[in-house]
Amino acid sequence: MNIYVDFDDCLCETGRAFARLASDLFGINTPYEEMRHFNLQKAFNLTDEQYDQLLVKGHEPEVLLSFEETPGASEVINEWIRAGHEVSVITGRPYASYEPSRLWLDRHALRDVPLYCLDKYGRENFVKDSSFSLKIEDYYKMRFDCAVEDSPLAFRFFDHLPDLRVMVFDRPWNRAAALPEGNYRRCFGWEDVRSGAAGGGR
Image (cartoon, rainbow, N blue to C red; front, side, top):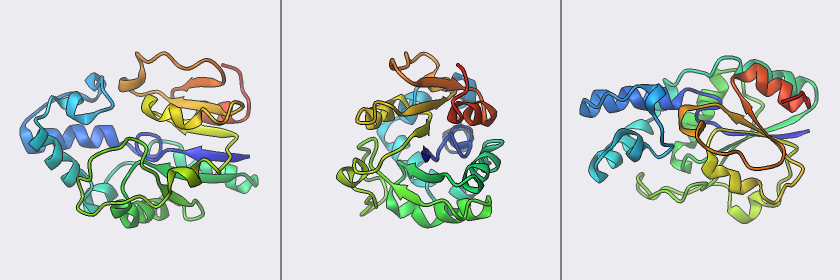
């Protein structure tokens, strides 16, 4: 199998980290479970200036490297690799974040997993001269059998793969979203993801 895995809030606890960061920077205390929007500006009710500050700070290397692993992620992914499956991490982070992101993967025993930076969300270039390493047209040439993703905004990148099994990693900001018809399954942890990738029942 070829497997697509999103980085933030699938491999690591990015939402929780940004909630702490919003509290530290601006005194805005929005509990993780009350983050109802994938867009962090809406989630924390930030001004444009605050939003830019949050994104810049949150993408500093030492901050990215401090994100905690989502329990079970590296264990399941390494099981897939040992079984002969190909796993690719497709992140919406800008390429300016590639090196610390790559180092995070290496430190979490995911050295054999390739990392691609794809402009999934059309975000502002909050990092000066930011770019992305995977072009949209090249992404669409890739083929996957399974995907692990938390953002409903990214589902459109699966429309060209009608047989794709999508494991939607449960997060507060996607609980109100109606999942597309087809092979979409809500997963409440990496045990569920493992089962879904193996073709387990809903």
